[in-house]
Length: 369
Image (cartoon, rainbow, N blue to C red; front, side, top):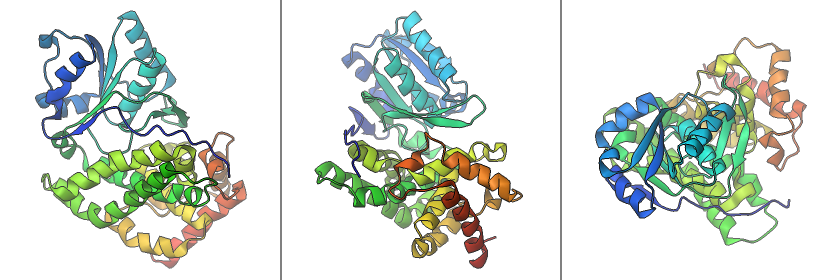
């Protein structure tokens, strides 16, 4: 399978340490940035405010903007207009994945102005990757865009992320393990020898092995408010290792079936309360059924139970779907722009439909309630 391989490996600078935000002023000045758009969520700013420097006191003009809630075309355009109308030098995004994705999209489309990201959660690899996942205003996922420029700077203060909602952290773990399963066959069947693909596969391997070994303890440490090595390793795996898979591997390391299932699930209003990674984790199980990797499903099952990850439609608030409604989801999985078309196995609507039905039966046989 001939796929594109253009490595966009990492942010230009990445700093993860207690007090990381103290570097923000010098980082801006070293980049000759004097006027910034500061995009943030309300809750995220409340968590981070105590650690942030006062940029205005350092002679930096700040246009403060509260995020509207979705990484939508309208929200991105709102940021682009502000950057251009206010003649701003850069955009800072502080918050979760949708805030960061909006900042990346707006920064690039406004003329590739520098992008500085301050993630306040470790729920995905948005702080690391050079792409944005796009949504409609109502929360339906409509695809993603990849950018040819990397983020200028990522600052991670572990204290802020440790104080973030635990369910987002768990969703980040779930999204991270998907990196291994989605890239596995693509990287196995790569038609070229490349050190970049080797690094991509090793990063994907860590996306599975580190969470399986450390995530349960890390989650307990987070509940206890303890900044431990286990927690830090899992947190950085969510952000860094997961981003390195596609960063090195490009199309060989892209999301495939599990994320396609996630995207399709967003057509159902009942799933909108579920976080991205939670829906992806269900997609992993559907993908494993498609690939007939039943032993791997059994290996994952205790981990899913420990983290309360979904295995059945009932776990997604979709337990009452008719067969026709399940087929509608399968049809959405196979839409022309779907990520599932990257999967080496040529899936059809019937493939996905029968996999969902079979997963329900498998769950019943394994006494999953």
